[in-house]
Image (cartoon, rainbow, N blue to C red; front, side, top):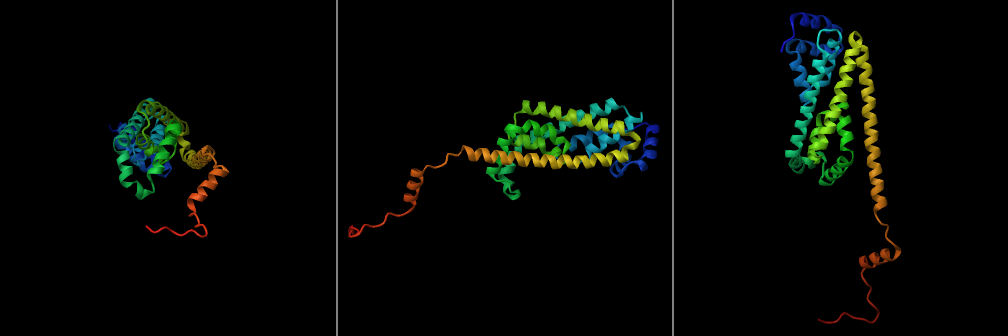
Length: 248
C-alpha cells in the first residue's frame, strides 16, 4: 500500500542524503510502502538476490524519524523472512536431491561431497541456519540447503525463527538508531559484514579440517603382518627352480 503524501514528500527530500543503495530504493518505498518490505525480504530469504536487507534498513531509518511505524516494519520483515526461508526449505526438500543428482557434477558437487554436506548439516545445521542471514549468498540459499540435506522440518523452523528474529532485530535497530547518520554508519556496517564473512569462511575451513583429522584418527593403522600379507597378494609368487608348468 502506498505511503501517505506527507511521508512520500519526506522520502523524496531525504533520498539525496542517503548512501547509494538506499537512495536508489527510496522511490520504490515511496510508491509501495510496507508491501515493498514484505516482498523484498521474502525474496531475499528464498534464493532470489533481492535487496531485502537494504529495504529493511531503509524502512527502519524512516521509522526512526517518525515517518513509518517501527513495530509494523519489524513484524512485516520478520514474517516475510520466516516464510521466505520456509519456502526455500520446501524447495530443497522436494526437488533438491534430484537437482544435485542431475546437475551437481557441473558445479563440482559430487555424490561424495553431497554426502559430506549432509553429515555437516546434521551436526551444525542449526548454527548455519541461524547465522546465514547475516551473510549474502547464504541468506538466500540456507533454507534450500537445509531442505536438500534432509534437515528435519521442526528443527529447521526453530533456528529459522531464531535467525529471522536476530537478523530483523539487528538491522531494524541499526537503521532506527542510525537515522540521519545512516551514510557513515552504513559504510561501517558493510565493512564489518565483510569481516564477518571472512570469519565465517575461516570457521567452516577449520571445521572441515577438524572433521578430516578425526576421520583419519578413526581409521585403524595396518599392522606389520597385514602389510606383508597385502604385499604378497600384490606380488606374483615366483616359480621354484626345477618346477615346470604341468601340461593340461
